[in-house]
Image (tube, rainbow, N blue to C red; front, side, top):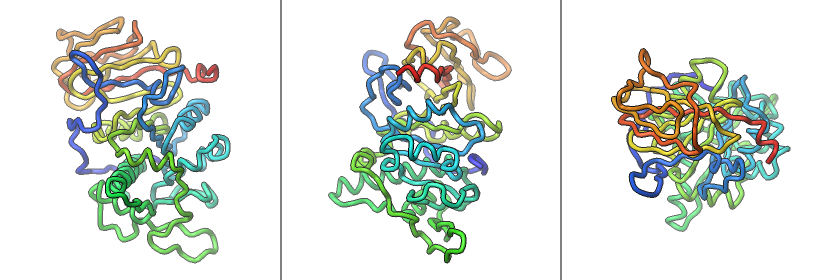
Length: 344
């Protein structure tokens, strides 16, 4: 399970712009560059911390893509069951254990022994899926570290504290089992809020968290593919959490998806890793006006971007920079060539 649950969450207003990375120059707006976020294709790192969320999905992304993201990551959060799929990474990616904030969920999919030594943050509520829980834990850990740094103190990153804060963030506070860990076979039940292990977070990871959630680029692996209703919740997360982080991407072996908010946006591609196939897809209320540049088939005010009308799929980037101006949020998607990462 990686996306079960149908949360009705009082989370951030979709149009809030806090934490959104702005481009420089006249008419500038939101700037997106996946290559910079994960350090692909010779792009220098963006200078912002990267958080990688690993979700449990039967449609695993290419190992080369996962490894590239994890090497670049400053903070990593695993969803329930994902450690079983990505156990190779804990041993195969240098320094990864020190970047792991924890594994998050209700632990109905975890296997005894998975991620031994990794803190387990138990959130048993069925009213939010694992992706929402992971995002809430990331946000609250960054808020706690930023607040503690400002006060000259040390943040409490215990499982119990993070689980309770995440529940409040999700509007689900009051669950008495928050933070409870599953007991190993034959072992006495764990006390509520106990940690399987103390947080093992490097100074670099802790420093990244002190910058606050709005400084993070977030990459989600395992949010695309598999069941369509799971994918729909992943797209919903892009809308619900828009503005909470500097950028947020859903990645699979073949595609990258991000939400462009209302206004002007610039997407900088990193060929041959990204593109040239791409698309501008409506989501939620259809925009009344979308104008693009940099595409073979640019959109203009005469076209209606909406289901039942025009959906700009299988478009083609003619340049490394695609500009989109819209009065409603839209999705931007680009094809990925994960084989190109092997040449780096």
